[in-house]
Amino acid sequence: MRTFAPFLILAMAGLLSACGGAASVPRASYIPGHAVDCVPFARALTGVALSGDAPDWWAEAESRYRRTRTPQTGSILAFRPSPRLPHGHVSVVSEVLSDRSILVTQANWVHGRVTEDEPVLDISPGNDWTEVRVWWQPSGALGVTAYPTFGFIVPSRRLDHDTIVAEAPRAAIIAYHPRE
Image (tube, rainbow, N blue to C red; front, top):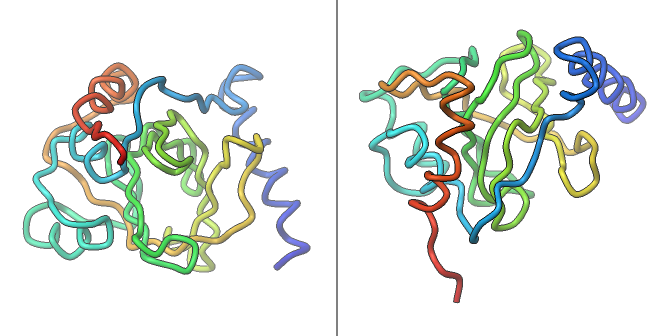
């Protein structure tokens, strides 16, 4: 698998450059503001009425929201707990680039920060989004760690890319809580 990693990075760069030129390779950026965690940010941005930690959302969503293995703009990608993410993670799909490539807007992937339009690549053997690699903003590259996921939770409220980008700063303010 290690020899496959450079191919994935090159493939991701190719997918992104084909989707809008140099300005979108990558489009990821920080939203200025205060420390924000992923759960309250995703809740504020999407309007889902889910509680608990990130890994709890998948089970809690079962009877309340549609759950799927297919990304759509505005859906929530729910990460399973793992050694690198013991508390799981949630991020909001800000754009679907292809059947194996999306952009997400999320909080706390980079500690305490909100980032927009970060690339995520499906690397699962079954092409079912059960394992992904995520852009790591500080290095300016696709991360090498494979993260397990549950899938996507589809909120009742439909969101498009422009709405997600416009509302992300407001969601960060709503989700803000001081660190002690």
